Length: 144
Image 1 (tube, rainbow, N blue to C red):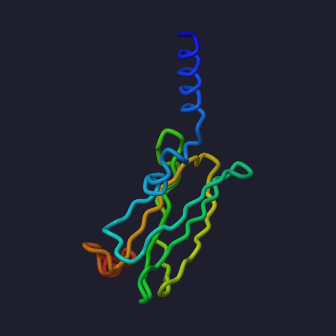
Image 2 (cartoon, rainbow, N blue to C red; image 1 turned 135 degrees about the vertical axis):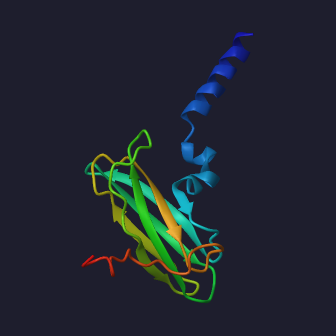
C-alpha cells in the first residue's frame, strides 16, 4: 500500500516538473502565431524566445514551401504576463521569402514590461486576405 502511494506521488511530481515543451510541443508555436487568413505556402518552422538583459528576444524562422517568391507582412504584439498589451500597435513590416527559402526574423521587445508576444502574419496569397496592405492615406483631407 505504501509502495503504491509512493509511486503515485513520484508520478505526480514527475508530471509537474516535466518540461512544458514536451507536453505542448505541437501547440507551442501555434499559440504564439496569429495568421490573418490561411497561410498556403508560408509557415513558421521554428520560434524561439529568450529573456536577456531584461528584454524579450524573439527569433522566428519562416519557410516558403512554394517555388514562387512569397510576399509576407508581419508585426509583433507585445504582452505582459496577464496578456495585456504593453506597447503601441506596430506597423506591418514587409518581407519577401524567396522560393523554397527559410528566412530568420529576429526582434527585441521595445519595453522591459513585455514578457509575452504574438506574431501576426498575413500574405497577399492567403485565402481571404486583402490583396495589398497600403498605409493609411491622408491625401485629400488637407485643406478642408
